[in-house]
Image (cartoon, rainbow, N blue to C red; front, side, top):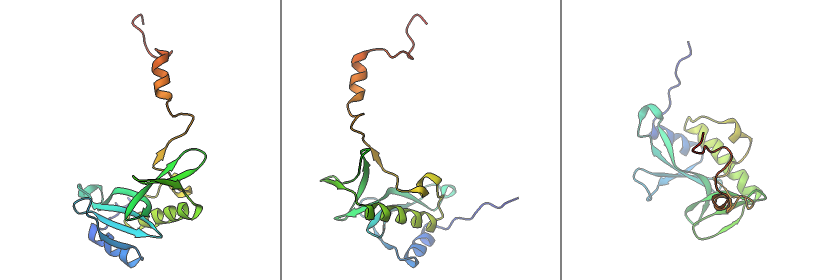
Length: 153
């Protein structure tokens, strides 16, 4: 019978990350948060609340580091964008490659599970297609949808 894999502790994960060339520093935005950066990408890790669930969890997922903040990756269907609270700009292929490589190395270093769809390429945090924007309000004007039950049935 296969044994359950032993996952490293949070401190062991931070040591492994330092050995593999990641920049590890304290993050002021959350208690016990640690900012991990490499290739111009970054993520915030915190110790897991439940020891059974794993040693480190993402407080803020991987994104490009812009002026000390982690920017989100926004997909608009025709192009991916890097979005911060202040501005957004088109993502370059180098930035997408950096996020993808950073996420793969980070997941492996902390003993996480590498998912198939994420290993194929960069996945976005937000999806905002122009053809779907405002569609929710249009449906409210139409009324009942054919699949919704009425009182007679």
